[in-house]
Image (cartoon, rainbow, N blue to C red; front, top):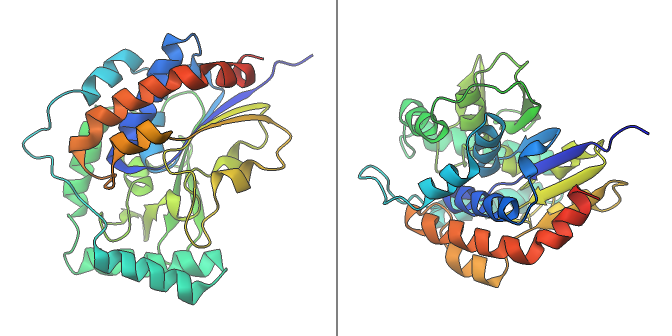
Length: 284
């Protein structure tokens, strides 16, 4: 009998999502559930940062400790402003249930915001991603990073075979439209892979045992929710999303570094309550 293949899916959720996911992974490891052994890691937006760190050998305890460090002098809270949220809403209204049309409209929003100086420059954003990844390169292990072509709304996945460096891939996956600039790769510009789904869990459908860690489990408009994507899979699946205490720690602005430390602590605490359920799927 062939061994059961495992997949770890890490969803989007901003700065607080990175911290909370690291907290969950650290707490599960403490409980005896090591998710870093995954045969496949899928990372979307915040999850692409965590996935890159985990697959390139970063120590989970060290990552958790980093989330507790004081906010740096150059770290400022970003946010989805009311105007940007209104444009998101208009895109959903005009696209109706057409998810590709929604992504095209959001892609136009992303390009316009960057081209009119309403986001940091690509260079500034790349510097921030480089600091977050601490020099990580594509791992030998399977890592999939998701993004969206801003021109046609096409869903894209980057791997070590894509000819794109890891910082660029993760930067594209984290390029929240209207907040951060799209990332240029050749003649294309890419934005946040979470514009298709907050976790893109269906990419792990071929695997036997799947754990999804999703700070934002529900999509908006035509964006697929985690539950919708895992329903019907023949795989064994465990989905971990924030409980009430974690939601309180995360707060209302997922792009606020001040909430990073409490989010990590809440994720670690929550892990104890889900460890048995996750272990049942992961370890059998």
